[in-house]
Length: 151
Image (cartoon, rainbow, N blue to C red; front, side):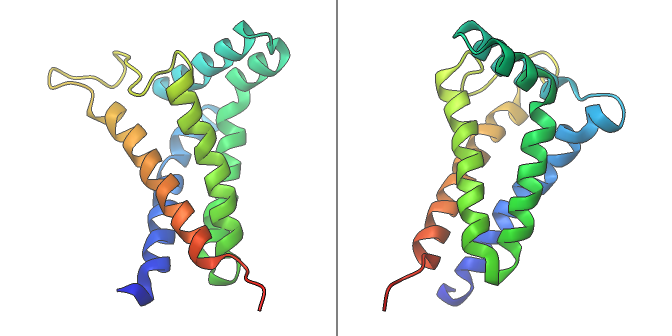
């Protein structure tokens, strides 16, 4: 198992990033997905509220595309063994931002919106944060295992 750990972690990170691309790109190729609009507009508004007006406004409108493109690049890099370290480093940067915004902004750990909730609750909302933590841990482990060493 130790022999394949890097590959398993890389595939997990790429899976999480790649499966979210539809949601991030949907607004640019058709109708936006409501939950994605909610997330990026909430973070954009928070940025505006703390004095980052121009950045907040831009991020609220285009953040999904920017983050989606970065996740696509990270996924390609992390799936190629020769560039896996750099993909994990980029992935850690991306997911650290996501975790930060979930913890320290009005978005919250489990953003509530009626958009994805049913009578059983909002399972997708909770999965989002826990998947982000899984990606963060996976990237940290990959970086530790693959970091260049002086010999």
